Amino acid sequence: MTRYLNTPITIVWLILAALMALSWAIGDRYETADVDGVATITIALMVLAFLKVRMVMLHFMDAKVAPFALRLMVELWVAGVCLIVLFMYFRPPTVG
Amino acid sequence: MTDSVSEKQAATPTRIPGEAGVWLFVLGDMILFAVMFGIFLHYRWLEPELFVQSQATLNTSYGAINVLLLLTSSWFVASAVERLKKNEAREGHQLLMGAFACGTGFSVIKLLEYSEKIGAGITVDTNTFYLYYFFLTGIHFLHVVIGMFVLGYLISKARTFDVSRNDVAHYESGGIYWHMVDLLWIVLFPLIYLVQ
Image 1 (tube, rainbow over the protein chains, first blue to last red):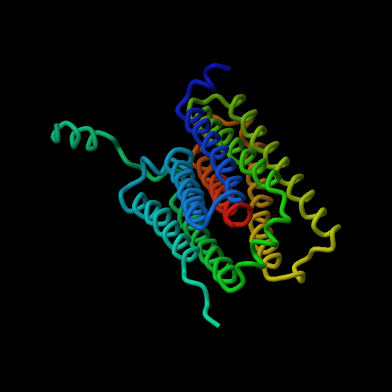
Image 2: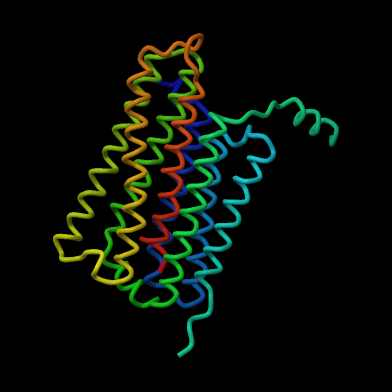
């Protein structure tokens, strides 16, 4: 059993599960947050989500050993989609 | 210092995990999902209050448990690939079965969630939020079902796996697809269930 537990994959899984619990706890803070607090929570939730995605891609999909071009595409997807999502959350509301 | 770092990097061989074709498919699919995230957020931008009110009716626990189930299934698949590389077919086979069990758990919770919504009279016609809720989670669920067929196929082959005769890249490729299913849910969970 220890051969399964004492592996880099298991450590990554533990970190991912802990980050997941953190996201869930942060999500609960919306109820008591003011306007600035809401924005901070939204940014924290999405950054945490894409951090988890990057960990899955690098360590589970093994993109950490991929050639430069593939690694670049992975990193660009994570950073690009995270930025687009955050931009769309904070676009000024429609007028009228 | 710089020399030792560059020597270390040069000494680390790079390789395409799995097969190149699966990366083409996975990255293409991920771009399509990114477009769907954008469409969801565009309609949210048009009707923010409706989206927040409708989102409040979702059961966050179902979404969160499903994140943990898919994360755990990813652990099973990645561990199975490690075992198969060491020619430990029996362990690899058992670990893949663990991943399949997690996928089944995800499916049961998803169907329970859908049945509760439909039982409460909520469908794709209810409003824009639910249209995209059913659309995004439904397309993702379709990926889970396809992934379970892939896992089922790999399970059927893993028992007799022999590293000298069989190519572990097939298992890596199946794993890469399954991990994509996992990471898409990692984004969909805050996007649909959490962010207000």
